[in-house]
Length: 187
Image (cartoon, rainbow, N blue to C red; front, side, top):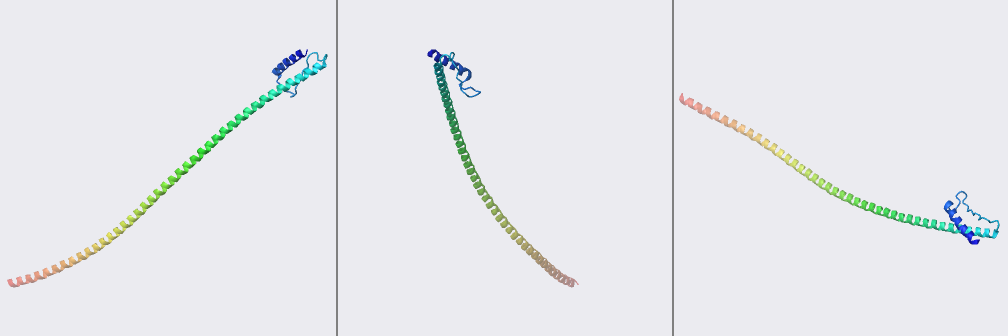
């Protein structure tokens, strides 16, 4: 009879676990069923309850072990994903730092190039200003020479007019004398 109760208990528990799970969902309390004819043999009934309790405890332990294993697997997966994410973050940070370094290098080069070009433009501007000042000085000197030459030309022209007038006067005077002599000789 013990064997049949034990077999019945196993069979009943398998059916019960398959139908309802290991825990009663409404009350979260384990329920132990009574085997038939338990009133006739209370010792066998108690023993059956002990077997049922042991079977339930094993089932709960197995379920807990499965859940624990699943939790460990999920935790390991989460840790692995975190490691991968951390590696990606570190890689992205490294990439960002490298990009910032390249950008700074580029900005420094551009700034240096701009400074060189600005210096070249300033030098060219200074040279142009110097050339313009020299050209202005040359123009001023040429204007001065032109004024001086114009003054000299005016003086020379005036002198020429005076010479011309003097010659004219001399020619007229000499011509008048010669004419007077010729008139006087003809008379």
